[in-house]
Length: 132
Image (cartoon, rainbow, N blue to C red; front, top):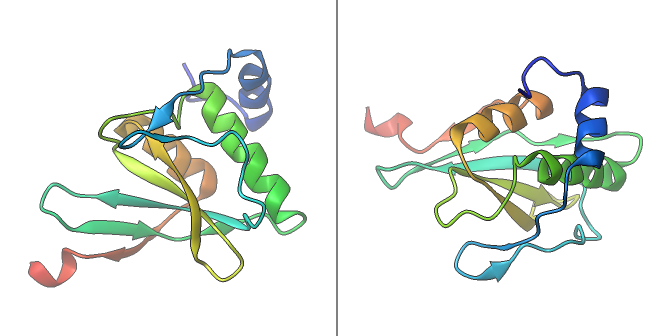
C-alpha cells in the first residue's frame, strides 16, 4: 500500500521496482529522458463532458530540473505514470515560461490523487465553471 509511506520510503521502494517502459497515448513513446528545459510540473484532466481542469504548477527551487526528474522517476517506478490508452489525467512538464514541453499519462484516479498530493497541486481553472 502506497498511502502512509514517507517520501524516503517511496523513493527506496521506487529504486527497487522494475522499470516498465512502454509507449503512451496514440502510440507516442513515453520518453526515458526528461526534457532538458523541465522547470516545473503540473497536471491536466479532461472531463467526460468535453471540458477540462488545469492544476497549479510546482517547481523545485534549489534545482528545478533535478526535482522534476526525481519526481518523474519515482512516479514511473511506483506506477503513477505509465502507458494508458485512456489516461485519467496528464502530468505536464513545463519550461520556465510555463509552456508544456513534455507530458506523461496518469492512468487512474488513485494515481492522480497521489501525484496531486505529493506536488500540492490545486485547481487553477475549470472549464465547467461557466456552465453551471
